[in-house]
Length: 301
Ligand code: ADP
Image 1 (cartoon, rainbow, N blue to C red):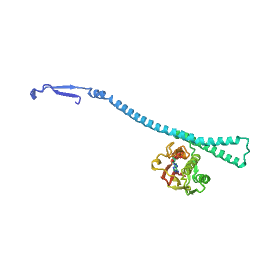
Image 2: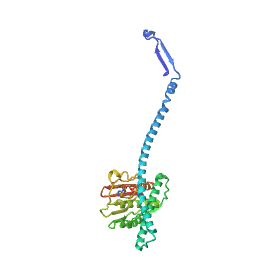
Image 3: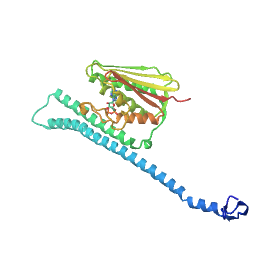
């Protein structure tokens, strides 16, 4: 009955004489749905276009920021490379001068310059390697295994003590190894790198006017193995805190090159933490010091 349209033929006749015209459309529904059905795909298509467009714009902006950071990275890197190369070639030149016989202590000096500068070059190369690995963070191969994390942290801290003493004879570094359940599922090499990166940063970003004081602690909290690195360094401003884990991000200071670095150490650290299903947080008071807290799930036995 819905497909029947009824109309009075002569509405001016008296109602008793009305005649009706009824038209029946057996295919009315098909006709209507047939004529609007083209709308549905076109709405869907417009929606897809819109989403694609927004995504493209977003990617373009992200790429732009990344490429700016990459330029900064290359500039910093070039600067970082120049110094050790210059020192090494200078020493090589001095050693090649046959006309003077060098006193033993001079030779020792040269030797230590060569040693430390080549070590610096190697470290730079390692950093770049770490970075390129993280171009595709999921492609990196972690070799997970049972790891007694207390020992790793303690050994790294002990080894680091020498470095601290060299840079700052009045500096102190303490280790409070208190975790009772230190077994985590981790990749030994990457975990050790993580600890070393955080230690390195504490020394790099110290306040030169006060002796460095660095406290490393491990403890358990719930089912987590937690390490904290607390320094009394320059601290990080609130607006920088969010971004220090970004690739190539470095806090800009008056002189960008006053501290050596290329801005990937923390990116790497955050990547390693993520791969281990851990968390990392940072808490800092500008001008006073910074605390990094990393936690990893302990292994169920
Ligand atoms: P890099 O040290 O090569 O610049 P990182 O990724 O290790 O790169 O660090 C990013 C930025 O975070 C650094 O430029 C520095 O400003 C800041 N930062 C890292 N660790 C500390 C710290 N312990 N104290 C103060 N600032 C820090």
